Image (cartoon, rainbow, N blue to C red; front, side, top):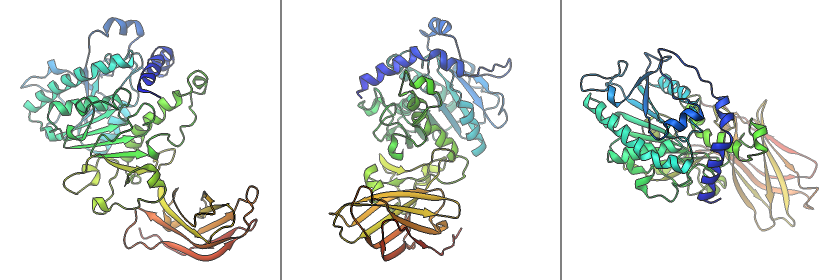
Length: 464
């Protein structure tokens, strides 16, 4: 689908699903606590000519009551009462909005950041400028960045250091953050792009989109790169979840009735926003979400990339750790990282390399390999060809390799193929990322007959 078609489709969404989106948003107001803007279509039409940007401040001192402020309220002697210049500042920037609707995820992200770190969280509210037709919204993003840069300049006068700012931009908000970084000549501490917007940006000059020169460290998470996200790397490191395109569990939308009229809407609200939900989940520290450096997703799935030697053995992890845990210098640029995830929080999955060597076959065959624990089993089907004897593939399991108790194999091709017994020279499983001291679990020289499953028990213990 062309960029032009994507833009037209997004504009159609703007006008067609407004009533539904506004109906789903929860509008809670409080006389004392500030909130993001949320307006009716009539009010929006009256105000959209003026780009209104406001800022909300949340800290551990006012978790449940955001404090609103703007550039005019800051002076050399006055700042938001809860703002602490001695602490780092996280700046959240939302992206395109449907008809002035407020993003319901903002407070959840802010609270996740505050649970993880004692920081200032500044939310940039540019909902009036982020609504209406997508191509017109894109025209606004640089002006928003200029206004934010004025705010940063004023906070610098209060003693804030540029390197203490971490911008987190969602979709189009990632490019807003990138242009702020451009205005400060890349001296901002960090920018994280959560599925940076793709339409009208993939072919853009680096000056006009997020890129590694916009901050001391730029990382990005890609989850919808075949539709509303960007498909090219834009940071020092770029995490492509499940290849960066279709996400597990996103095939069907919970707004099932909408899909009758807009079949892609489920991807808009699921694939595109998965980066945000994975990022928030990573802050809980339940399990690491690490990326494996590789040239392409296809090479990764084929088991051609199994270690992080390019990072001196330390794999980058999604989250708030400094430089994603990267310690090498100089930092990489536009390094693609791949990982597979599960369909629900905490989204973690253990990567396992399966290597299979068979004796030459007379005819094609199919085998099913299952890795089992006491309560879980994970299947992987392999098509075996007559001209290939060695197969490598990456699969995932909810539990680490050291908890796998049994490997089982079935010859499942009897209905479609005529190959009889399959002689297995070796089947090995090993964990990814691989460490030099890890030894693969292997079984050698056995036959798998049609209708007679083969299995082997492993005796091993996890060294936690």
